[in-house]
Amino acid sequence: MAETWDGWLNDLNGFHVKPEHVFAAMETAKGGPVDEGGVGGGTGMICHEFKGGLGTASRVTSGGHTVGVLVQANYGLRRQLTIAGVPVGKEISEGAFRPDEDGSIIVVIATDAPVLPHQLKRLARRASLGLGRMGSISGDGSGDLFVAFSAANAVPTEPKKSGVVQLMNTEDLGPVFAGVVDATEEAIVKALVAGETMTGRDGHVVRGLPHEPLRVVLKQYGRLNEGP
Image (cartoon, rainbow, N blue to C red; front, side, top):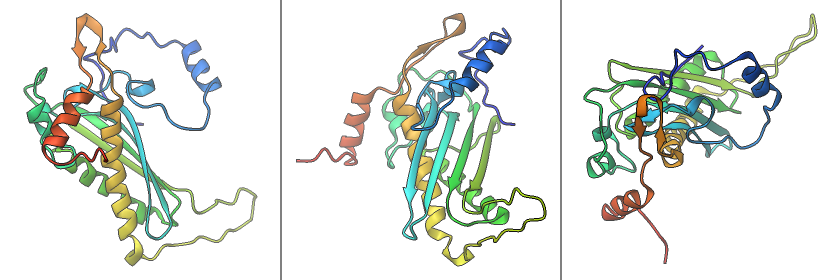
């Protein structure tokens, strides 16, 4: 069980989600690309005092393994926000409204690398490095939750049947660690870029990260390659 508090935008004590909403969500669930920004559980999220939400990203490692990350980003102060090493939050400071860090983030890491639980714990810890790249300090009020799983080893389902478990050499985990860090960082950026201005309960307004000012700031710091 994991949660990220959305009480600034959402009337969370109103019990507006009814059984029919839950059943409708389950019946319409499907595979494919994940919607990003303020959708689903990401609807009421606030990230670095901009509109947050869901974000996804993936990497293929030098060893040929895939690492995928999904975040539900709901943490951080504006002044902390860093993108590609640029102090974006200090350059785009208008609209900041929180004196102290608040909120949480959920990071789900999936991989096809053959890793076991003790190695998955190490992967999960690397999500914090992706957060650090974004400027997060994981403040006292921030409940950062990381979970990782591997789809490499099939579990036998028939009684009295055994299976073969593969184990990746610990010395080969470096590229997978790098994939977790990079994908976590990018997933948070994508949640921010997909976030749209929202007016919630009691007239509370949270602005989406403005795209054009972001481009200007990144270009100013030499981080935006717009091509020829």
